[in-house]
Image (cartoon, rainbow, N blue to C red; front, side):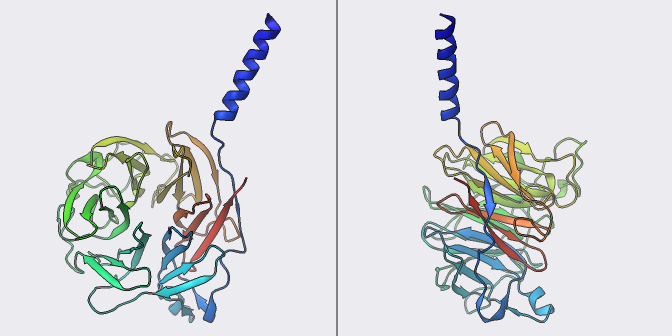
Length: 352
């Protein structure tokens, strides 16, 4: 009987191990991307997105390349899965106001390319076709009017298209300006709703200047640096300077929050960007931490840290200050953008 019971327990243990999701592991691919043509240089990479073709898109800031005497690549670059440049475009043009300083890029399910900026006057977001033809602008440069203005942005950082509703969710924005999530109709640009921390009406006057881990949790967002919509409809919002993300329903109802390395992380904060694993339940969350220069891996249900990769440095697989954003292709490979003076894109292949 004892032997039979032991065998049964062993079978249960093996079954549990088989059913438990495997924590993903990654290794850097130093051959990706291929060298750029025309002796182009890349400046700080402030936005990165994967499209339905597993092509990787970035926006980068050209000024530092020019200041170093180099030739900057055009601001928008599309790479294929092998790391070759497919096309480039971007910059000022007729009918729209190009950002003073680029921040985010997102390619949605309808192949629209959304671009945000966090320059001094950037209060607009732009939509283009994948070939770079202008579609739509929401907001207007120089019209920043605070976190409860429904017509303009304030240093918007990222956009996410919700195909189920046709809505465009925007993280808005950098800490010197707005402190909210705002939602528009992606087809028309019409305002739908907005909210601040804990799902409440944002109050810019109550934003704390510097996070204090010993103080009560801030009642307002600081730097709203990213957002991502999970398959279950939950909206995850990066509050970078406050070392946390908050989770909401799509209507802005607050669900929970979680802090990352809040005791040891100073300055610019720990939660810079968020991505999810590819399994149906999206069991794992990946957090780009541009202060501690690593990618955290969390169990999405318990929010426990189950792994990490990366370290500070300039070598392959390391991050020069800071790792600013990340994205994932349909095979689970992770791509990161670094917003240091000499920008860099890296690919981390998932280990089988």
